Length: 463
Ligand code: ADP
Ligand code: MG
Image (cartoon, rainbow, N blue to C red; front, side, top):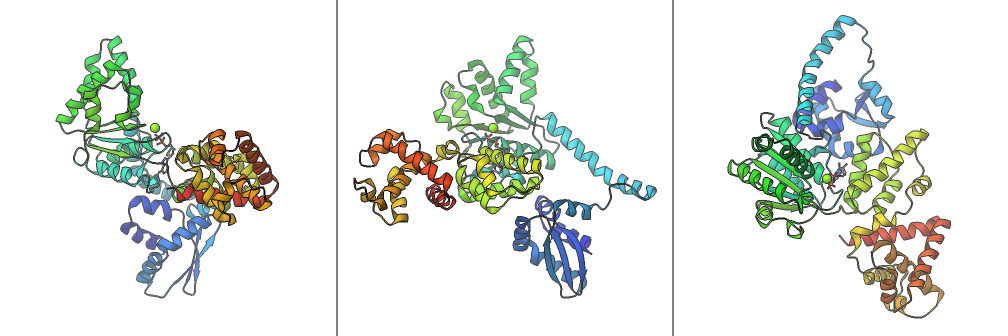
C-alpha cells in the first residue's frame, strides 16, 4: 500500500526530489484509518510535513477511497534502513536471484554512466540537486541549468566567476553530469586550466600537438575550471584561443570559471579575454545567513547526521566566508560525534570550532564601524555619540567594548583604524576591549549568546 502510494507520487515529482525525500520515509504501521510513517530526523520531518504530507495523504485517499490520517515518528536512521531493506541476505535463493537480475540491469547502465563521467574527468558527486540555491547563487545556478538542458544554444560561452569555495567547480561539474545523464551521446570534457596547460606542454614535448588539438576540438561541451591559472601563460592562451574559435564556430558549448571578473585578470591577451567576456558572465557571491543555514541542513541530511538547531545556528552565524568552510566545520563536528557515538553538545561544538574570527572576517569588509556602533548602541539603548565619547560610565563602557570587539571580529579594519573611529582612541584600547569581551564570553554563556546574536544581526543585515 505504501509502495503503491510512493510510486504514484514518484510519477509526479522530479526524480531527484523524490529520491531526496521519499527514500528517507519508511512505512511503520497503520490501523483504523491512521497511517504511521517514520523519518530519521526533525529536519526531514519538518520538510516532509510542509511539502509532502498533503500529497501523501491525498494519494492514499485516492487509492483507498477512505479518509486517512497520517502520523509521523522520528526514529533512528538505521531503523529506517532496516525497514526499507529488511534483509540483505537472500532467503529464497531462486526468487532473490530473479529479483537481483531485474535490479542488476539499470545498475549496469548506471555503472556505464559513471564510467563516462570519469572518462570526462567529471566528479560525479557534484550535481544540481545537491546545490543549495540562495540569492547569492540563483542566477549562476539557473544559467548553468539552462546550459545543461540546451548545450550550445542558450548561453554560449558562459563564464562563472567568484571567490574560492563558492561552488564554481560544483556547478561546472553539475552541467557535465547533467548532460551525460540526459544526452549521453554528447561528448563532454571537463578540465582545469592547469590540466589543460600541462597537457599542452606535454604534447609539445612529445611532438603530439596535433593529437592535443584534435582532442579538444572534437568535443561538444568543453568545461574549463579556474582559467585565472592561465595568467602569464602565453602559448597556452594562444592554444586556447584557437580551440575557442574552433568550438565557437561549430556552436559547441563552452563554460569557464574564474576566481574574479575577467577585467581583473592580468597578463591575459586581449583577444582571449574578449572571448571569455562574450556570451554570459555570471557571478557567485558568499551566501547570506539563511542560505548558510539551508546549506548546513542539506549537508546534514546528505550525511545522515543529526545536530541541534543551536549548533547549526552557531556555525551559520560564525562561518561567513564560503561554503567550503561551512562544510568543513560541519564535517569536523560530525566526525567527532561519530567517533563518540553520541550527539554533540553545544558547548563541545563551540569548543571544537572556536569563534573562528578569521572565517567570519572576509565577507564583511564593507560593514562599516559606524554601523556596528549604531547597532550595538540601539541594543543597549545608548547613542553612537555616547559610545564614541569619552564618558566612563559603567553603562557606556561595556557597549563600547562590545562594539570594539565586534568591529575587530567582523571587519578587516586594523585596531588603529578602529580606534580612530571610536573617537580617536589608541589601538591598545581596542585590543584591551577585545580581550576583555572575549574572556567575559568564555565565562558567561548568556553574555556570549548576546554577542553572537549581535554579530548575527550585523552580518545578516548587510546582505
Ligand atoms: P569553488 O570551485 O568555487 O572554489 P567548490 O565548487 O569546490 O568551490 O565548492 C566547495 C565545496 O562547497 C564543495 O564541496 C561544494 O560541493 C560545496 N558547495 C559550494 N556551493 C554550494 C551550494 N550552493 N550548495 C551546496 N554545496 C555547495
Ligand atoms: Mg573550484
